[in-house]
Amino acid sequence: MTAMTPEASVFYLTVFVLAVFVGYHVIWNVTPALHTPLMSLTNAISSIILVGAMLAAGSESLDWGGWLGVVAVALVSINTFGGFLVTQRMLEMFRKKEPRSGEKK
Amino acid sequence: MSANQLALWYLVAAVSFILALKGLSSPPTARRGNLYGMVGMAIALLVTLALVYSHTKQVLPILGGMAVGAVIGAIVARRVQMTQMPELVAAMHSLVGLAAVLIAIAAIHNPEAMGLHVPITGLHKAEIFIGTFIGAITFSGSVIAFGKLSGKIRSAPVVFPGQHWLNLAIGIAMLGFGIAFFVAPETEWVAFIVMTALAFVLGFLLIIPIGGADMPVVISMLNSYSGWAAAGIGFSLDNPMLIVAGSLVGSSGAILSYIMCRAMNRSFISVILGGFGGETAAVEGAEKKTVKSGSPDDAAFLLSNADNVIIVPGYGLAVARAQHAVKELATKLAAKGVTVRYAIHPVAGRMPGHMNVLLAEAEVPYDQVFEMEDINSEFPQCDVALILGANDVVNPLAEQKGSPIYGMPIIEAYKARSVLVNKRSMASGYAGLDNPLFYMEKTMMVFGDAKKVVEELVKAVD
Image (cartoon, rainbow over all chains, first blue to last red; front, top):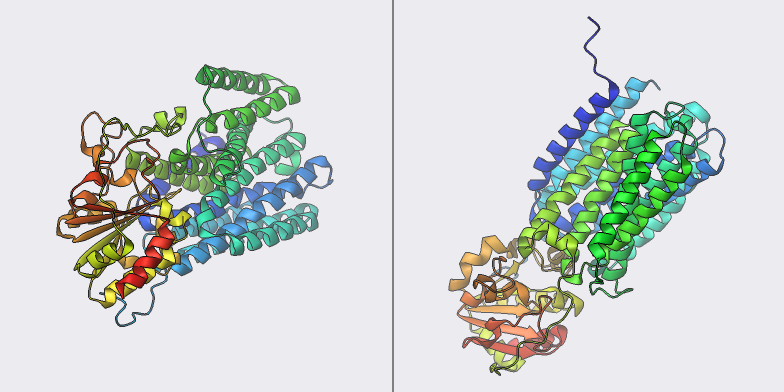
């Protein structure tokens, strides 16, 4: 009997299903008040596709395929940086203000 | 760097992303959450950069591209108005979708550079196909959503006969070319290109029939798609990092779509099929009902003599940029001993949670802002419900069997002892329905632009 190591594709499917499950539970815990920051944050996270773009842009011979990768890197970097920064900006607005007397009730 | 090291660093990054999302469970922990996200992303990008460097040393083009994107991203993040967040998010989804397509093309062109088997195996071809078509649909769909949200194209639904059959035909054709790409022994460029082009067209056609009222669902849905596109590319490239992060985003968008659908009492299918909220049907005006209208002074008198006021802001408020004036009004009322709270309907803005951000921007403390379910029971004890630029979300018709919006959860402002409604005119809302709330005995209408009216209220409360 060979070692019990599944094929890579089965392993990735396992990762995928578990990640969806984790995502499902974590997201339901997000307070509705922060759904807009959630969207901009997930937007920033989805720019993880940058990893793929980097592999394409880093090919040995920078032919047209490599240049497509460079374009993809530039496009998605907008998400990476813009996404996290705009989320930060929004969350700053939700910072608890120092309670000033007379402000509340 | 060994493959194991790489995978372990990716694991650290993936855990950081989960912690980032977990942080958003409450405002005080949210900023730390975002920080986790940044750290996770930085780790993922640095190790990938190190990997590329150790293989080909070709990091300059990458850094160049990143610098361009970083500058644009930073400028946009700083300049964007909070009312424009939905457009920004839509635009960003389109970038992820487009990048997925570009990466897929690059992978087919040069599989070796992406660590793929040459020639590409059938399984990977299928995965590339899935990642590409989701990416292409995300791209063109988001471009249309961006256009509709920013007002660059008309937000009214575009419907024509046979639309759904056309979409179905395109979908089947796309699948057919995808299979042709899959079964071809060598890389079949023609099939791939036709498939991708069809997916672009499909994304466009899927979003044009969806009207402005359904935009919160559309934008959540595209959020989900962008995540699945990233996961699809992750499968294509055997990269668990992309799979994990993509799935997190995908499920997040799916849950938000579900929440938005539930808040409008619409099924996901009916939103996708579109056509809703187009015709602003004239209010069935056979019987002229009378409304009581008053001046801001009358309204201010009512407000300052109340103990308990609940403000119901709608998107009209944001359009008029009246949030700051509202905050000022609330502060003045609070100084007079009036308890002021805000009631937010899940679809009050143009995207999930939009109204909360707009109020936060105006420095309204978030503990005065309540979600619909949490505050609805309070209306019977509320002296004045002040409705600013909201219509359908306070329409009591939703509780009447047979009405088109029957079953939609609403903010029960009609249960308040008296109701003040600010609107520009008697025009109906997105749903094209009359609103009986406006004709109730205890309701007073204050017509005019939200900002002007609220500013006059602020003056009059003195």
